[in-house]
Image 1 (tube, rainbow, N blue to C red):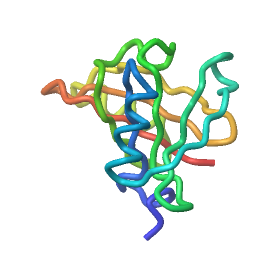
Image 2: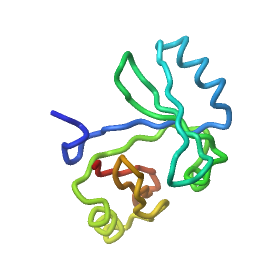
Image 3: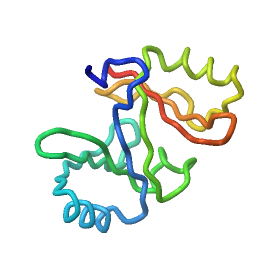
Image 4: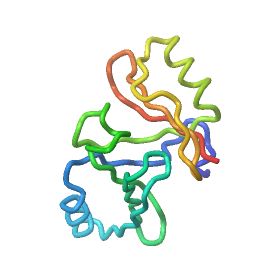
Length: 130
């Protein structure tokens, strides 16, 4: 199974924190993770840190001061579930009582994502990859 293509699979993890340097140090010592930083095109000036386990990208880190993360609590770990169509999935979630936290948004060179809170308030991100 490829989690980046499988409908309903957990496919990405992301840490939102106010101290990226401290998080990098902690998780590098704990798990041996390494990092790749890049400036995101969708929000000029935002640095996105990709977490690598060995050579494999497994997640990311964003600063809680970044525009993408202002609507979500901090610090916290979040997960993404792969869906075939973000827009249709968010519409279905809303019709079932979910609240949109971040509307469907394109991520250049990656795909499209959205964030919602389910009827009980649990927050989850969905994504379809290019």
